[in-house]
Length: 264
Image (tube, rainbow, N blue to C red):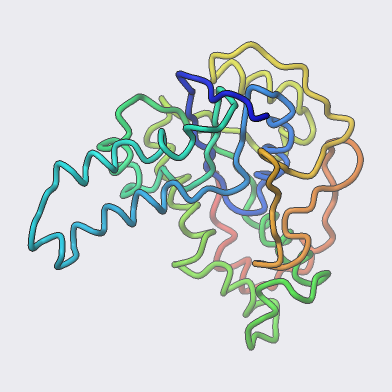
């Protein structure tokens, strides 16, 4: 027997680079049965693909903007219609300038964003550890022989990290609707940080468990990491804590020179 979908859902957005605590955040938030924090989301991609139809010949031949706009206006409500949780936290780079404009036009209600921040060198060290310890990780699937080559590919201007960096940069221009959470604060003082998040959401605090976290599962679905490589989203066993990553010492000097200036 399935749960009845709840009315008047609250939708928030999670903006963050990869390897910045997205999975940990989702695991903790999803302890609250009223909340579904998505591991990843295709909703923004659906909206962008629909919007791009306006550039096709078949649309330009019969440019019914109003009807297509009606579809764009209900993408999020339609996608999450049958989810039983009352609060949805949708992960995606909604704060890039282009995406933000699209959201302002077609998501007809005010919305808030939770922005996770992590030092970029720590992000790249996390990538290094993952692809070194997991031979099937996607950076190992290309003809790339050095860490510098692999990290340069990860930092490609068309990749996920670049898009999320752009979204974070733009989020600072809209700080009235954004709440910023530093990764280090989240893992060293989790209860304090999650209380601040609930205050931002306007919701009563849920008594979360930080002594151990479960792998992310939302409505019976989990990550299928075969797509990107094993253990991409595997959480550490044990309590929430800051773990030293020795790969921070192994980041190539030219990568540090090129990207080390990026700070939040």
